[in-house]
Length: 90
Image (cartoon, rainbow, N blue to C red; front, side, top):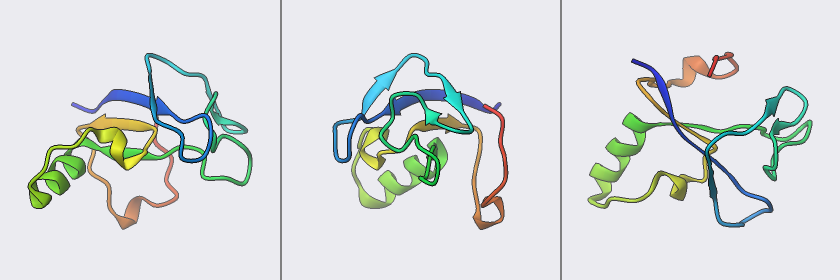
């Protein structure tokens, strides 16, 4: 089953990621309160739990998903190059 595991934002470039229980999101502004939330910027990044777990296993380390600095951590989805530009519903 696909599900949203966690949400994180950063207030400025290189700021620590802050876990959120919920956020407002829009096409115009991305995630409310996130540094990247303006038009013309990459507004939302999504990280698959499977991809993160696989990467950590290959490196032989366990790291928090926020190390990747993505906004949404999802479970049950696996992304490929064919998914670029597609819309998903969270």
